[in-house]
Length: 66
Image 1 (cartoon, one colour):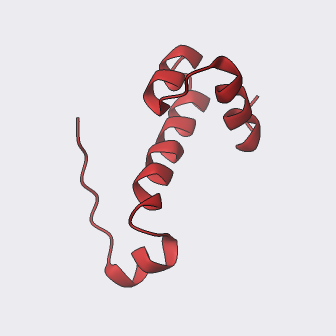
Image 2 (cartoon, rainbow, N blue to C red; image 1 turned 45 degrees about the vertical axis):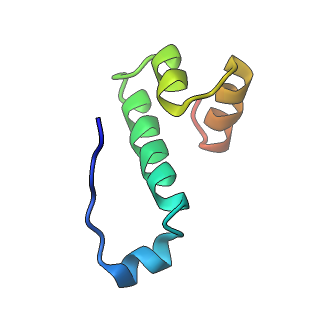
Image 3 (spheres, rainbow, N blue to C red; image 1 turned 120 degrees about the horizontal axis):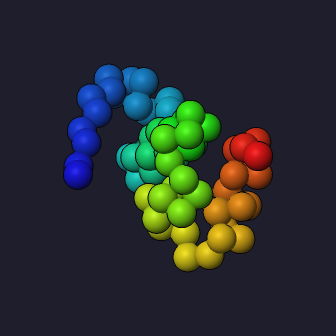
């Protein structure tokens, strides 16, 4: 599924590059859904495209998620 989010240009410029912003938005959504228990670790890993569990663990640690 593709999701389109409209962000005013001046805010988008401050929030990040066009290349980085979609990934950051996906990661923020994924982390929140994981925290709420709506995604398992396996689903989170698949959604974010991590090849290994260690990569997912590093991502979770970087986002202060136990």
